[in-house]
Length: 162
Image (cartoon, rainbow, N blue to C red; front, side, top):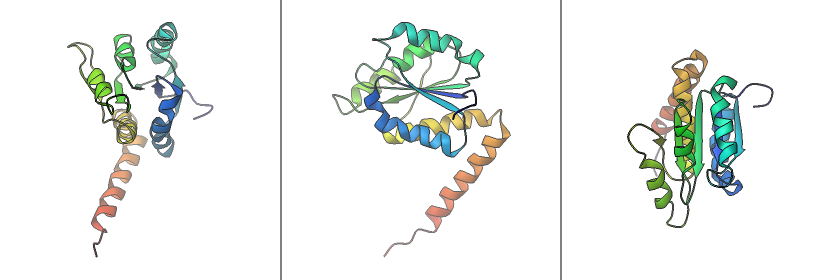
């Protein structure tokens, strides 16, 4: 969101990830969470990743969401340089995203990355998990999350079959 320091930083390894990660950004916007979306690569722009992440907390960021395909090292590199919660979203890649999932989820003990599902569901759930993390500190997000869950409940309960 423009004009407000981002509470959530959304990173992706390449612009092609935006088709999926826009669902993360849209969910954050729906909940009115200030966020910033950037393209940075763990391999092609490592210094820029480290610079951004080492300054993120002092700039107001509380949660980082990192998406990557292929080698999928972005979330791990980010987690190695911050104490902020890092949520990883594997992108569909050469092996239908299985390679990205395994690269993201197999972090060594001591450097955690919360790993979500491959693709769109993971992108949306990363935003919702980020909002849940923020909700522990910010009552406004807690209320919005409760309303969202209630809407989901009502949608399911009102579903009829032919």
